[in-house]
Image (cartoon, rainbow, N blue to C red; front, side, top):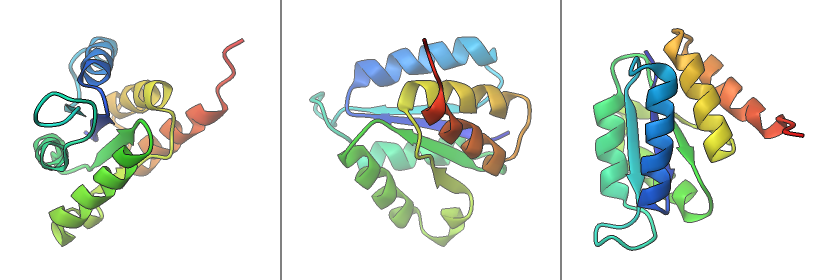
Length: 130
């Protein structure tokens, strides 16, 4: 199954979204989370992102969802550091973090491939709430 990695500037946001996704998918998929800096401040941690991608990759790929700004750059740098072995296995979604992560995780939990999971996450940009 496709794994999901959440990258946020906030550990609390990453933890809360992880909890929500895990409950919605019944623990069927590998979910990684990276939030905040090594010393607990707001920010991102490239080393943690790399670790979570490696942990969540089970052969079907990993979709990374990011919140904003430097989390995109940090996720891109993590992919560069991972090198060719992960080049075609890891995708970064251009999607809203919460809605995209939930939609992608549910899609991954039914066994869809990474391109379908990414498309579903990105379609969340058009979600009408009211």
